[in-house]
Length: 337
Image (tube, rainbow, N blue to C red):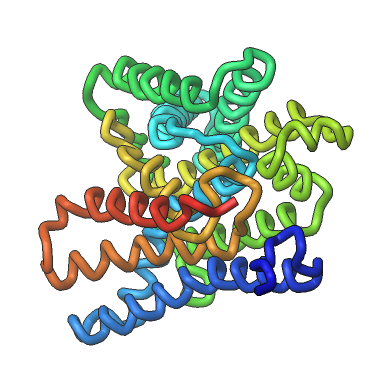
């Protein structure tokens, strides 16, 4: 009786075909899950399938979705960032403080708002740069670095706000509010920004040398070094990119409430990581995609929306549901390379 064929004895085209089928399964799984959830939502509540509810779901997805795009790069490269929620809170508070201070010396509220938006993106990039340098040059594990900054960022926001809320000036809030509440062609502005960030992320990951380097580092960092890839530089850029995404998400979030408090951005890191891994990105790095991440972010928002509309379980258990989803996906990914 002939021996069982192994991967070493199976012809290369067959191995590649098997890998392609596995990748296709991971890629279509989130989409199938989202479709089934939407069907369930329509059956459970007639208001689920309305246009207003769809726009509401997408708008609320935009913040986490934008951060998840940056997080996708970090996780594919083999890293992690636990601080994005606290980072967003500190960026929001710092941006509001800057705009309130600038309003006293700059006559144009529009110019003040533009200055604040630019500041949010730059500050996010600087925080990401600090993470990248500590991880690459300081040789500290990403988990430890971002766990530390998670506490640092939120502590400083609490200090700046004296434990309360930092509120945007009412005149600036009026000028700033269309960034969140405005719409273009019937689609809210945050959704358009989310689409633009996702498209840019997809192009960078799949159509540039940098994107290939990110995937190579996540697959095998040592081999990437042997292939003359500047691993440290790529990792630093990856964390800067995530910081920029956090800044963009924050500048969209600030006009929603016009304030920042110690609870701002709470558990955003959980939602962003969940969106990435539910979208099919391997927890060990090396494989993943922006399309799956977008679907994962929408899928999690749909779950929350269904829970809110149907009251199947308490809305206070939304985070618990996301935690169970992360564990379940990790369980099914446990043998994936």
